Image (cartoon, rainbow, N blue to C red; front, side, top):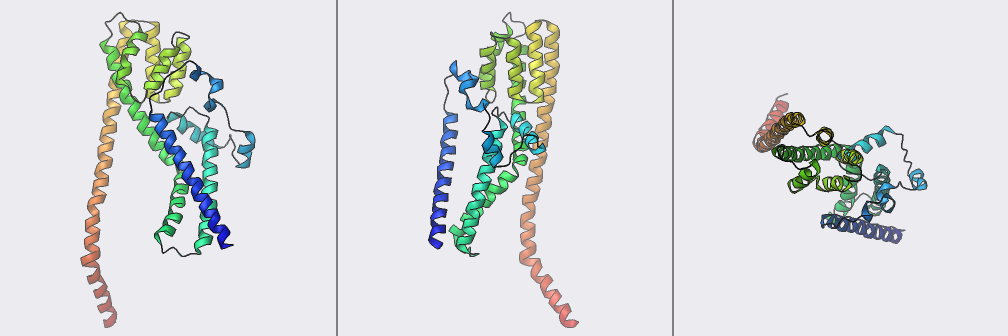
Length: 296
């Protein structure tokens, strides 16, 4: 029995190593520059546009109508994930199931004795990963806020460039082409928009709005659509108003970040005070309690 559990744990650890190695390789490949081709845009050749098999979803008890699914779908869309959210739900459930099984096997193996560092890591790592996956909506909201702020900054920069080119006779498509070097997070989405522009500008703008998935992105797309249809100074005045709104949001985000940083620094500054209380004051409190008990 002991040998079977040891072999199962070794197999599980090797499988986890392969999973983490695959995730690392995938992340490195995503960082490499990509050559955009016409075939890459075809939906039939892109697995992200398809849904997982229904049998797999039933096996892990995943249902599309649940409120938790709908909330995660909105969060993933806001984070820029264009794949079917069912893939994320399926992968999340599968990882939780595998790690829970591995954790039970480790508990049976060590029988409650976790004195060694290896045993503590073997138990602690799966627990941390499971807790992170259970609380995924919390860090997805954080990622959404970070991406939304970054999008707002880039939209603010692009809007200023468009306002700078307001007196130019260039088409709005050419003006947006000149704004590509000022983007980072939304560069691929903007390039996608410009590639689909001549096929159908309205549909390209709708797809661009869905890919951005933020409130500021939607207002930005509406402004671009208005400039596309009517090249007049009135709409550039609207763009100037939007720029002021974007700037105000960025300033509020900076103030909020400063306030959060001050709270963290205040909490860190309280650590030496607690340590001083533990080292110097707490022994006197204990001695006083002992004295009162002896007097009683």
